[in-house]
Every structure is written in C-alpha cells, then in structure tokens.
Amino acid sequence: MWQGQYEHAMDAKGRTSLPARFRDALAAAGDDRFVLTSALDPCLVAYPLAEWRAFEEKLAHLPRFDPNVVKLRRLYVSAAVEVTFDATGRVLVPPTLRAYAGLEKDVVWAGMGRNAELWSKSRWVRVTETTEEERRELAIKLGELGL
Image (cartoon, rainbow, N blue to C red; front, top):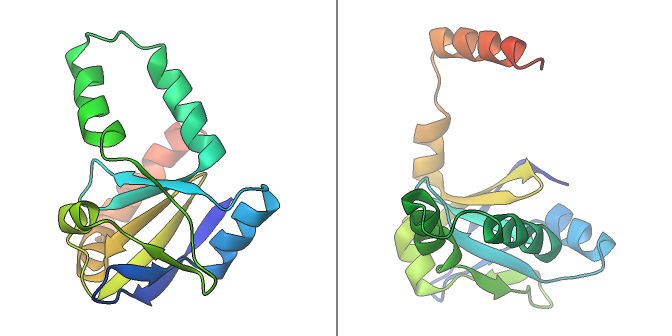
C-alpha cells in the first residue's frame, strides 16, 4: 500500500526521488517496476506493475467502441510508461508527462493506497485546499458510503 505525502525536488533532467516507503512497498511485492501515466486531474499516477496489469485486464473487458472507454485509453493507457528507480531511488519522468502535469522543481508524491499521484507542489496545494463547509459535505458523503 502506498500512503502518505512526500515533498521532493525534481532536477533539470526530470528526475525525482521515489519515496523510500514506496520503494519498500515495491520491493515487498517483488518487483521494482511501476507504471507512470497521466491522470484525469493535472497530475501523474503511479501503479505497481501488478496493479497496472489488473487495471488493463479490467479495461480489456469493457466495450471497445464506447466513446468513454476510447477516451480513457487515449488519455490514460497511451501515456503509460514503465519505469524503475536508480540506485539512489530516483525516477526519470518523461518530458511529455512532466509537461502534462506541470512538474518543475517542487513536487509532491501522494500515496492513494493501491497507487500514488505525483503533483506539482503548487497544484497540490490548490487541489487540497478545502473549506469547513466542503469538509462537512465530505463527511456526510462518506457516511452515506458507509465509511
């Protein structure tokens, strides 16, 4: 499971450290590879390889000509790249993915359970700001979902 928020820097070559806890989770699963792709939000999503394969399997069973499925494949699957981390724990984020997510110097890895998101720090701050009213509405919705 990937959880927690970790702030890191990205260098001029597009390398950033994968949080040690995420590396440990990959090692525990027996594979240091993961998939990085564009998200529906202006960020990137990282999946352990086994989780990505399970996602692709589910996607393969959806109606191939449904316009929403086609769009998901175009936005999500076509941008996917398999990556590994180097001896110092850094990953190289391809230029097209960096541009999509607006990644520059300061980035945030956000563990989401079975995957993680990689955000520009300034965008992360904006999307995680909530009002008291929004938190109350969220609490009600979570109660309705049985959480």
